[in-house]
Image (cartoon, rainbow, N blue to C red):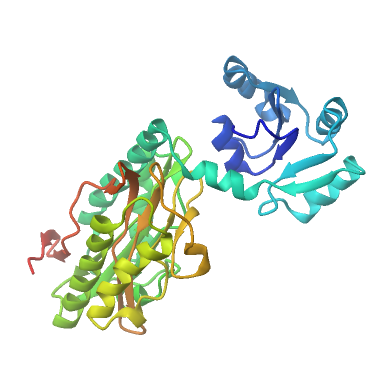
Length: 356
């Protein structure tokens, strides 16, 4: 942790604890001072945490309230406490104020967010494994596409394979969208049955050793028409334009504009209704933001991991999105995914690649 310049910091968020300690738990908090980092955790996790973290130089304290934190305030003669305003709940803040009368609070959220965005080589390897599991699991679901199968059926098959292939969980609720449902970017997977001659959009990811993967593939079940093929070609081109032309030092806004300009050339810019990408790590959505909004005024750096996911959505008809998890190395963007993004056409229980 790089907050040695601060006298006292508190981390309560589950994902942030996982990031800084490498220990997963649903409860507990971290107290960080200039001299040491301590995890305060209840008896459910205490012995496992002690075994894993003490050899790494962390202190592990059995407890559940802010008593240890109050002691740390006194022993460090601290007058201010750094917390992440973005994740601290009102109830937590009230409890802190009660336990620590007279203490001022300052926001360490932006610094936590930035530090977590620069992945080291070991983190890159873990995310690569999460992506490999997601991609392998996706390909293993292909034989299950048949007329009458539901979106929920496919999601269940995919998530079963996540765990079978080594993941601990899904990164987020899997999106499987048949037909016109694909025009809803974050469609809620349901009981819609697969029919002939419709698009299939799948947005999914899994967690491996605490880190997320994220990818989207759009396929076609049956015979795609010319309108769908033209839109797919545009999204495909936008995806690779971003992958091949985003460079370190660009802002997230400039990166987004690369893909958006391709879709504008095809007349589809107004149908691209979300941002190009978001950071990926222990959180599925984190810093940086590749977006035309003010949040995109951040600089892309080596070590950052983010999505490249242009899409177009025609309300009531169909939607197309192509997404890879990517990382910045040596000033250029590299994808974690191994399979190409050529359109997959599902016919008679078989997978075919469409040649434009």
